[in-house]
Length: 174
Ligand SMILES: CC(C)(COP(=O)(O)OP(=O)(O)OC[C@H]1O[C@@H](n2cnc3c(N)ncnc32)[C@H](O)[C@@H]1OP(=O)(O)O)[C@@H](O)C(=O)NCCC(=O)NCCS
Image (cartoon, rainbow, N blue to C red; front, side):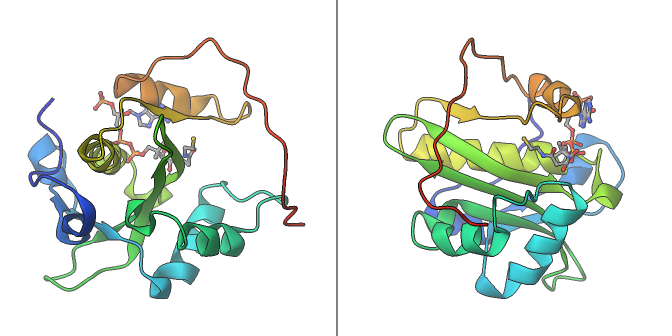
């Protein structure tokens, strides 16, 4: 599959990496993928709300603050190119590598910018960054009420693991 960001990614090189949606043959502006910056906070939280990713038990601001303390370079945003300047944030992906698995959270593409391969480009960028760290597998969870997105992940080569996902809250946000 050739529809991936054209530049190799690792660490800070993600900041300016460009995913060219046009290379997919689909219309649409380029998505520029870079590391999250604190100034993106309000736009990213608004994006997550628009995409239905915010839940009462997850304070998005705290989630961002925590991510800033751990592998912040794996927290990506996608902006729409605006004459060479940094455009508005229209996409995000928050990844991490714990030494055994890579994990992905908050994958989001703004509703008006979907089906332009932006999600695919973000996943490719995340996979490149994790591979560069020697990560052997990327895992992710899909909320049970969000079955529609499973087809998206299947298109990108992700399969369903035969696991039951368990969790225990250590720090309540609400
Ligand atoms: C899931 C999401 C990120 C996809 O972003 P996107 O930019 O529209 O996806 P792409 O254009 O890169 O699509 C890549 C492939 O997946 C397919 N696809 C995308 N969304 C799909 C959907 N809802 N159902 C079925 N297939 C889908 C595309 O057709 C394309 O396949 P193809 O090129 O092989 O034909 C976006 O719909 C979104 O933000 N959803 C809300 C937030 C969310 O649920 N995030 C995931 C949390 S686990």
